[in-house]
Image 1 (cartoon, one colour):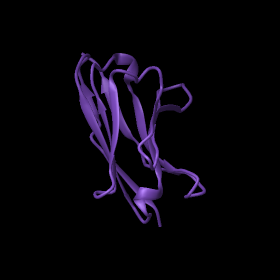
Image 2 (tube, helix red, strand yellow):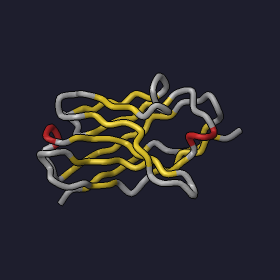
Image 3 (cartoon, one colour):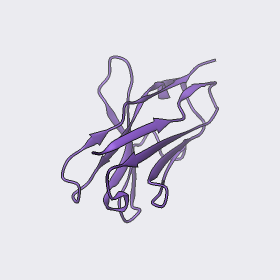
Image 4 (cartoon, one colour):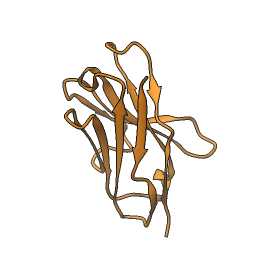
Length: 117
């Protein structure tokens, strides 16, 4: 049974930084595409960043230059380092697990990120 456990959300001032973590279990982690999506109130869930099994990375335009996704296959964990945070980054951030070797998508429970002074 695949499980994703997120941590690292919270309240931060504009310009601040946060690091989100997502630990996966029940899957051969190195075979997965991992990523982060977010959903703000009243908006659709949107991609933030994806990292493939080979380490290829795809960022949303809003994340480029500010966010960094990485994975540690030894720890079965994916990270999202967020810097220069803006109020418009406020959302629930969801960990994503999928990819062609997995055959379906899995989601974490979500972690709230609030950027406010």
